[in-house]
Length: 200
Length: 127
Image (cartoon, each protein chain N blue to C red):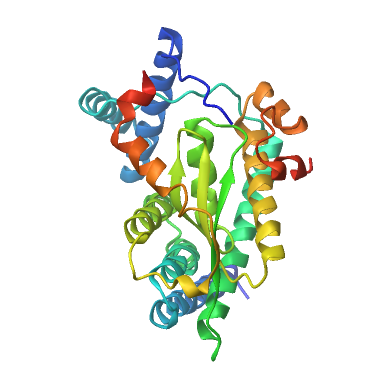
């Protein structure tokens, strides 16, 4: 998979990013105070403005749009996965006479943007038996440590699980162009596993 | 049973479940064989345990000011725990603390040098 160049953001996109950041920061500020008053909102705006001037955010390309239904599907599945993962690790912990085995696998993502890489890595760290060791931004590859696998078949099944997770995230917040990438084989064809990413 | 009693019971269930999960995370930290498996314990049952405790507190306190703070705690936990686990994993990876005999496959070993070199010279790649 080749890197697509991260071209500098346009003025409009930069302003939109700043607006999103200010909204988020003001929300956190109001939540911290716990009550919604105009004094809190104005205080939050001042703090947000100072923060953004002192600590400018790295540029994030967000080409997509938020789709409520896939987003909901992702969130429900994420919570379910979190419960399953916790139960699994807790079970491994209290089981006697058993040493859990692991594996380290490389999973190239099909949509190589910073946002997708971050979201997938975050979600992946919290769902069953996986932990990010390295993220390669140049090729958009995540290196994942898997726990509780016994055979190479299970490792492959896990790899497909990661790709399905990525697909759910892109379906929730990605652009149509990114979404379309899931329904065609990888142009480079470097990774045969790419073809197995079954559309849901 | 009044609504208050129902909410209090639910809060109690959440608190106990959360505490048990945190206990399991603690047990896992001691019993797991190497640093990578231990990070699993720190990243998952602990996060869900904390979320359940927060939910229990929210059900018990039932006042807006407290609940918003609890929501923030949960949000930041979800956002930061994976990053912390990633940082520890990355620092631990090439060292001897990792039980390689327990790994079925290791696809990072071959690429590690390239990735680290890329990170050392980001300017060369970005241009």
